[in-house]
Length: 311
Length: 262
Image (cartoon, rainbow over all chains, first blue to last red; front, side, top):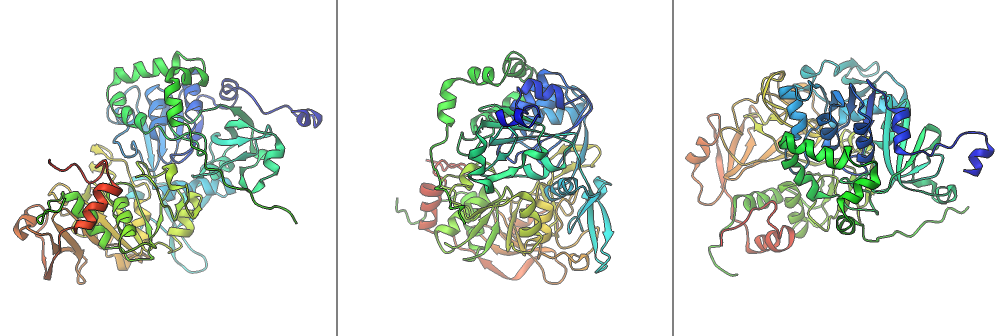
């Protein structure tokens, strides 16, 4: 903080409430990534509380996080590649929106994982499209006319293309970052790096804010550099019921329970009321979840020794 | 413990047959559920050097608990490497480094095309399924694909409503003509027997049958006139050792192999 002040720029550290108010607007294209790991539910809940509307939500796996946002009426369009509750079943709020227009109709734009990863890669590289050897023999290009082809100028091969995806804002959960947003991630990376570089604005949410000396002691672990980050939010347990490697386990019981909650529209409304609208913030959510759950999910230590960066 | 005519569930037989399809040292792109169990069974028996890669990025995973999601933290702990998903799809899969890919689906047709997208019309589906995930590119790039699915006329129609993941032939022509790099679905492990594509036209035919199963019954569970290979293999039941591993070590809660009676 002292450093930041010295260099004359404002601190990026802010509350979740301020970060969402500043960087997520009605009608925005929003990416909250994290593949099973590091899915920032805390950000989604604040977006729901601030009643953002007409969002285009993009994620490989909409997961419970977008099911909740769709149920709360935040979204009018979904860009995705696998829409289910992993190992459990369907995303019922999503299905209600698609099949019955409840609480409002939801447009779908569908890819495969590789296709959506490629869209973010193009966006991150600031290229108009990305090429991939994919989709020949599949009906997916017929379902989504944005999946096209290009002829390779060197070999003449026909390759699939997908357009760049440049979200208005990407929200990334990470284990730790310094106050400038140099964010360190270990465990599964998903597409966090591509999603962050592709975005116009980046919000990094972390389990803990550390001194820059901690980051500099292990620079190979920094996945997202502070130079692309607009806001840093410290939100312990911010990924629950997803997980943060080394901090807490995935709450698989909650993913199973969501099947029953999301299937029943009034039950889902009650859940949103209890765990989102009627808690002020993440700390309130965790309090409502209870101590026992936290203790059960807390990660066991399995620390790796460091390496020698000397020369 | 030691009864001579040991009973087993269809899921146990499928896990065992799928495990036998794997060779030691192969690089396998694996999902959760039965394929994961099959890989762990193979690792515990004839293929200790199998390299498991998950689309979530875990490379050389040795999960100490059964992963309930494809991104389980136990896949990372003690793995050989963690890759970004861009690397997984571009370098590992598209780069031709994956020997075996496991797939399942709501519908599998006579040419091994897989539908995991919609039942019915795409715009107005009867059932909206999860979609491709990585299935389309696994079907295109894995050197060979193993499909694991129980037989039923609904699951095995003559042609799928939507081709999520291409097989050997379909409305876009033969796989060879499309120039797909991978070999496509070369084995379909079901609960009654094993199917494989014929060399002539890529149509799936019955190549192996399980103990006590009638060929006629297999035919009634298949949505097209199923051909039977000239040399139909009679596949052996799971061994005592395999069942012990599945039940007592790999899936003690019966999450994927199901519960036995009594």
